[in-house]
Amino acid sequence: MNVLNGSIINCFSVTFIIRNIKAFIKFLSKAVFISSFIFSFLILSVYFTLLFKPLYYMDIGILNIENSSGLNKNELKSNYNYVITYVTQNTNEEFNLPTLPSSIHGKIHFKEVKVIFDKLKIMLFFSILLSIIGILINKKRKTIRYLLTSSISLIVIPMLLLIPFLVNFDKSFTTFHHIFFNNNYWLFDIKSDPIITILPQSFFFHCAILMIFLITICSITLSFIYKKAKKSHSL
Image 1 (tube, rainbow, N blue to C red):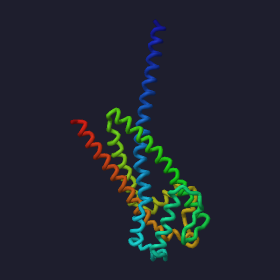
Image 2: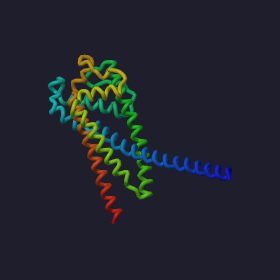
Image 3: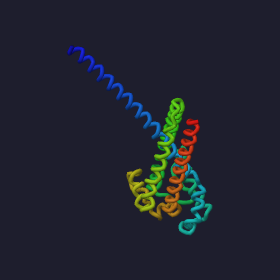
Image 4: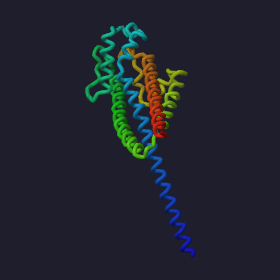
């Protein structure tokens, strides 16, 4: 009798463990998929903002960058375009601005920025890949809940980012650099790295606002798709 009871208990324990392992794997796979799905939109928003040169061209006039830098509009565009090309394209060339000098520390900083964006490219690739796999699995299972979860997450993220940006952008800007860089090479000397004069902090604030706007649009779009899909499923 004791042997029988022991066998039943052991069988129950094994079944319980297997069930929990399966539940954990299912939860983990969902978390990985939704995280990848969200990261895809976040990274794409970053890249869109970075490559959206009209924002800087517009800020040349709004922020009066010609006067503060002493450069004309063509020079400003040329140097800015070089920076964007350098940090986004696959190249091992040394950082050399068209018409402005750069210090060793300045060149190292932009190299570090480039490394960050190179890593973002890799993250974007795998995020999109996992997202596609997850979407196909959810489509097969006829579930659309991930759209709502992602939509809510994407609306919460910009709200959380917007608060510190609006309260104290200077501190947020500094904190950002402390998180992503393990040195102070980003603190440029205007004499050795005059590029700081063509990239005012207000411009980065406008970039942050554009990214938050894009993320919000993505959230609204996903919410709309979810509601439309849910309505069609209920018919």
